[in-house]
Amino acid sequence: MKKTLAALVAVTTIAGSLAVAPAAKAGDGGAIAAGVAGGLIGGALLGGAIAQSRPAPVYVAPAPVYVEEAPCRWVRERFWDGYGWRFRRVQVCD
Image (tube, rainbow, N blue to C red; front, side, top):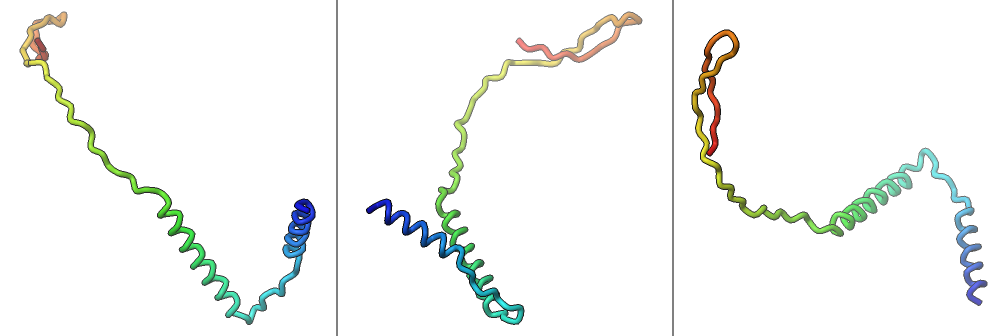
């Protein structure tokens, strides 16, 4: 019985899809406008349902991080560059 019912539903579906509907005429603007309006309304409803299905992202602030900086200082260093004595600034961290 289940197989017969499934076959009947399949045949009905195929026959319904093969049925030829009368084409809209170029002068029949009412049918085309109704189709466009139906598509817009259906798209709006579907888009609204999709937009409401996901929760909004929630911002969570990261935990504060405290870094103890090493005491550093800048010193002038005298060096020989091969031609003479020069000075440069060097950062020294203890």
